[in-house]
Length: 82
Image (cartoon, rainbow, N blue to C red; front, side, top):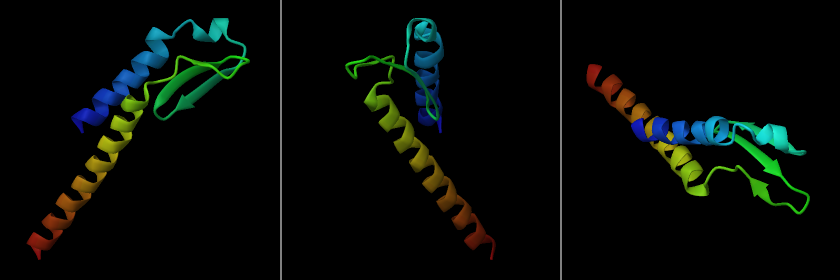
């Protein structure tokens, strides 16, 4: 869970702190809410302000791992109580 939260915070900081002025200087602005991202797309297709791909991969991998481990722990607890 800690890795998931840390990677989400890194995405949020990149979107709303590092690239805070990006919406003022961009014509084609794209916002993504999960994980947070504010991206400017130029005419030639170049992206500015996008999250690093390894941060997004880390975010989704840790989120999936957290959900799987939590569901397995809950299943074990249910089996032990019977």
